[in-house]
Amino acid sequence: MSERDPTLMSGVPELVLLRLLAHREMYGYEIARTLKVVSQDALTIGEGVLYPALHALEARGLLRSRTQQVDGRTRVYYQLTPRGHRRLARLTMNWRRMSEGVERILGATTYE
Picture 1: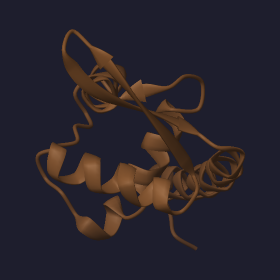
Picture 2: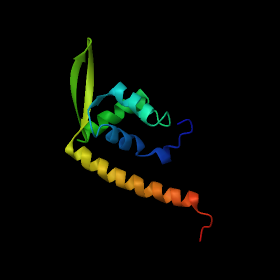
Picture 3: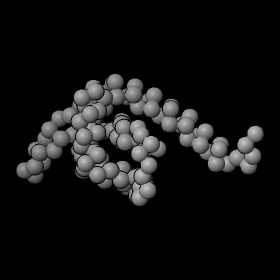
């Protein structure tokens, strides 16, 4: 995302992080890499956004974490809680409604 509008991006990191973690746990670098690959480079998230967002989601009870030693390094794995699954469902519904509205506006030939 080379041109970033904070207003338009509001809530997007939360939505995509919850979605990526909906089916399996992942650690930070894996989350960032998966986001980039799945979005075909349309979305990237740096460490300065990723880790504070993960910690905030965990503090809100939407994620839980566990640590594991891998090749002498400590990895923190994150996964959704039941509350996180419910939040993801609400965010997804809201996002789809909003994006459908934007698509209708973009495809409109008149505005009456």
